Structure formats: structure tokens, C-alpha cells
Length: 217
Image (cartoon, rainbow, N blue to C red; front, side, top):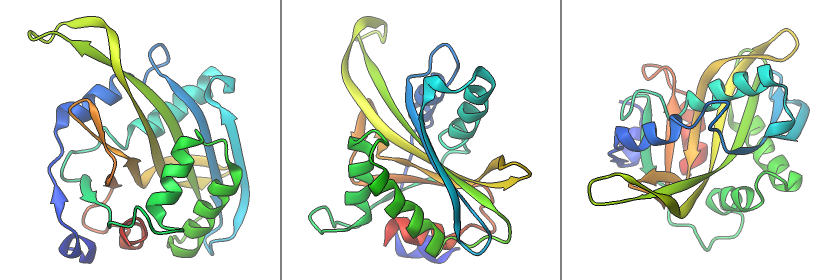
């Protein structure tokens, strides 16, 4: 059992909640608004950043990025993707919760906040290869449903969220499959769990504990 699992209590994730998000991650159905990120060398130096509207990407680039983003919520629920309550630091200046809330509210359009996050990653994340940090912003129009679960047509609320994926990169910054990442805020039964975060680890036997500790500190 890893250190952060011992320290922080896990909260059960409903697989159907995650599937309701991933079903929309196709070219025709996606509502992704923006993608941003940074490329790091193995020593943690930031080699470059990017930030663009999702619809400005070429179709092949959209497909590739949807696959990267989808890998986080589509992961094996409660095994590779686990939910934790973030420390109660909502009113604490410079807390990670506050930073992520700001990034989310800005829809990835505040580069100053993004730079702070990239610097935290560069300081904490451990890798023996160049890697990329990919951030996605999405707004999910949650459909209203009748008692028999048939869609009524109009959405009753919007779930606005971030997905982060950390991938090794090779060649011309070509990303491999995500090694770790997160979904923030967590999503449950048609609403946001504002104080919870879903953390993804591709290798549960050898997770990036430093990444989870950064998110849960």
C-alpha cells in the first residue's frame, strides 16, 4: 500500500459517472473548449508551453488529444482512478485547490496561473525521460431526465472541469499514453464534488507518489 493511500481516505467512484463523461469524448460530441500544456526535460526544466482553443486543432490533433484526455476518466475505476478529498484549504491563499479553481474559472486562459502549476510539476514530478503536462477544459451540459431516465432535452446544469494528463514524450514532443493525471473537480450523480479530485495512476504497483502528494498536500 502506498504512502498517500495510507494518509488519505479513498471515496468510491461510480463507474457510470465516468462513462457519462467519456461517451462525449468523440469528434462529434466533444465540448472541449481549450487545451494547454508544457514540455519538461527529465531534470524538470520547462522547454516550452502551448495554449490553444480545442477547435483550432487539426482533426488528427483533436483525435489524439481526445484519446489522451479520455484515458483519465475511462481508467479502471477505483483501481487506476481513485477519488480523494482534498485538504480543507479552501480559504488558504496559494493552496493548490485555489489554484485549480482559478485555472478552471479562467477556462485555461490565464497563463500566469498555468505557469505556477507547471512550475509545481517541474519541482515535484520525477521522470527519467522528457514528458509533457497536458491540461484540458470542458463544459458538460448535464441533460435533465424524467423518472424513467429518458432525456427531456434541456440541460439543468453545467459541469465545468479540468483533466490533466502527464505523458512521456519522444521525438518532436510526441506524447505516449498518460502515466498519471487527474480529473478536477470530481463528478458524481450529475454534479461537481468541489472538494474532491480523481487521481489517475497508470501503474498502480509503481505509482508516481510525488504527483499524488503534490495534489493532496
